Length: 336
Image 1: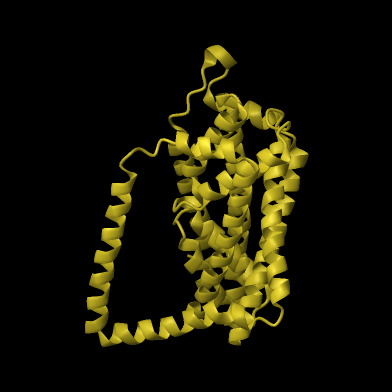
Image 2: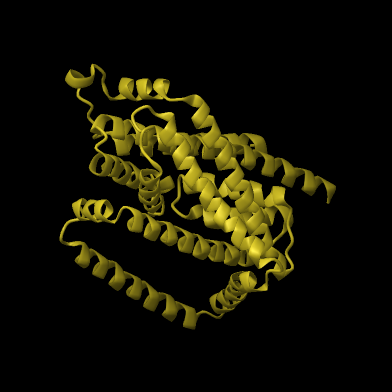
């Protein structure tokens, strides 16, 4: 199988899995035909047809701008370790990572490092350390937005959190996960101590990861790194605003509502699920219904199309980036 055909085959599999996961998250969605005159799928199609496509295309432009800035920020983090890369390579690897994340939760973090290694031989352990640094910065930005949202809409959001159907057994669930992690850690430690080869591998990996983690403290232009981080998350916020403006049912919502829904959506997307599928479709509609009295039919249709449009952009960008990567790698192998 040629690299191009292999990439197309991978893309088809990823697309099929993504469609399956989306269907699973929507299978219980029931739009009453007596109230709307539509079944679930025709109602979704009607909602898409009624949406302002100019706003949706603008959202796609902002999305690509945020990805380019994120790729540039990642490129900055790798420079202090002596592993300079091209913006095009970091962008291609980032988009491939987004594509993999749609199938394997957090799998994109490793795959984008491996993709970069194929392009310019940047050590995976070093680039992975920079990815962890990126994630720490993103968590700080997310928490800042969540805190800001709770300050602006504290009463509504607190009532919303209390209304979520998490159940009274969540403490036991957390305890179970904590015990499981401790047990796995103990097994890993015993295995680590008994295997010299594994020991050497982990030491080498940890050295590279540590180098990547510390790269943020060795940046030549720290202010520019902070600026990029702020702009990236500002673009995420603007993306939410443009999509909300695209639908007649939500276009009347103000900036405080956009902030609240953006915070809810960001938390849902952070869940360890492929592309946030499932968690996003649970939390965002509930936020629209509970906080802003959007009818359930409209809230679910809005969420499905919003998430679907974001996913489509990632699939298209990731698939193209995967094919371009394979072409570049093939050309480089021919030259050598």
